[in-house]
Length: 227
Image 1 (spheres, helix red, strand yellow):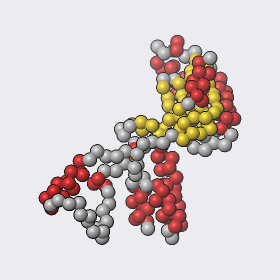
Image 2 (cartoon, one colour; image 1 turned 45 degrees about the vertical axis):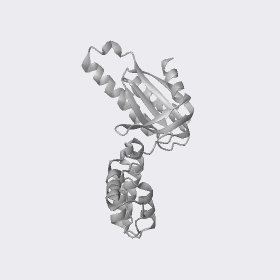
Image 3 (cartoon, helix red, strand yellow; image 1 turned 135 degrees about the vertical axis):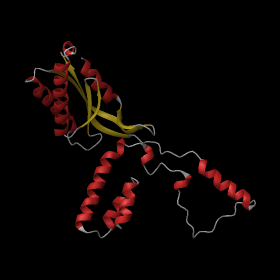
Image 4 (cartoon, one colour; image 1 turned 120 degrees about the vertical axis):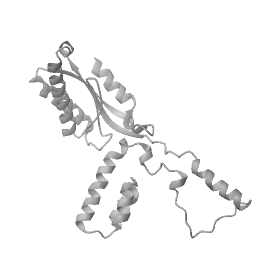
């Protein structure tokens, strides 16, 4: 059972792994270790390329049941061999990502009053580091997830990647905490906060996959940050 669970986890087949962990008589330490790995993989899964997930398969990955008789496809043996070899060059099938509609909150924060210090590289780096630290700490403390950092704009979501009860209140409290943390450092920050529905899930290509939130809620937060 342990080998099968490890095999499922290595292939990111999390549903099969969870079923095996639940139903198999494992020693408590091993059960706890597998459960911890499973929880971590569930957290990382939205950010993984689709090629890492079970839906990405090629003909070489398909398991063949040797106990079943081979169906007669017609033609001579030479044609059958040619048909089998051709299947190995079929383009891999990729499971399309599914976006889930969620009630969530989105925040966008931005540094203000620091562009005059850009020429003073040391001062700007110090202020930027303090700013990023304050945002990340506040968002995580209020059960949000920092998504994207573009220049000095930091985007974060609440109740999108992971559950956050009272996400509207938590998002506002997080941005207030950022402001309060930066006041003593004489660093200005402006934030936009919006709550509502958004389509959330992994988007991208085989080479680059990331978790995204799309919808009016995200647009509204970005617009409020600019006011």
